[in-house]
Image 1 (cartoon, helix red, strand yellow):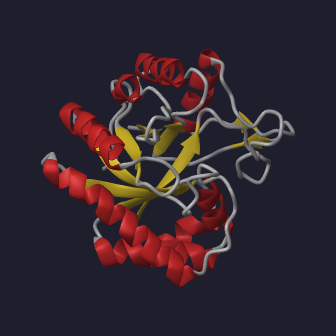
Image 2 (cartoon, one colour; image 1 turned 120 degrees about the vertical axis):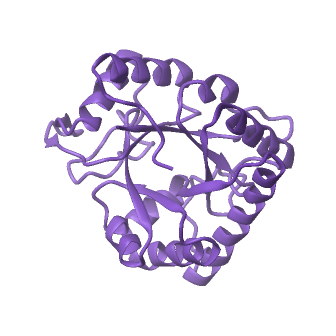
Length: 250
């Protein structure tokens, strides 16, 4: 079985990002922004309500405090700052979950924080401490093959390794920076085929042509990728047609 997750609740005030309602019909887990890189109280409430109505698992999509840069700028944050920032964000999202008789089931970092966690054990440990302090039963999504997976598991947390159907990979298994060509994939058929290969343990091509095999429990389609709904729909259809069961890990 494989989970499909997407980033949701990323609108802010009069600024609209993504097609949340349509994506919620395709995914099994929703990473909902908690106000640090995107999202505001009404957006969070609406996203939680939509996920709860459809039985989609809800995750806190935590970030550096970077609304201006959409959480994609690398900030110098001390581990103790990250710990309190993550606790703050999970708690904010949980308030809306309580209103809609549901709960936060997992935590996933966003953008620059996600990439930094993959290579910085101090930050990964701080995020793990925050999750454990809030609710040690929560799962954590982390980049498949990164040191963060082991760091978080050593803290007794349930870690779900994540792969990206709509992103390019380096030969080392890291995501190609968005500033480089080939970082974001937008062809529905290509994304679906790539997602199926990742989900079944078949090799995909890294940016330099190197075969890369990933062991994952969840596949991500970014909500702000052009045509995200079409990508998620085609991915789910291909997985189902090839007898890969789609369901949430949470």
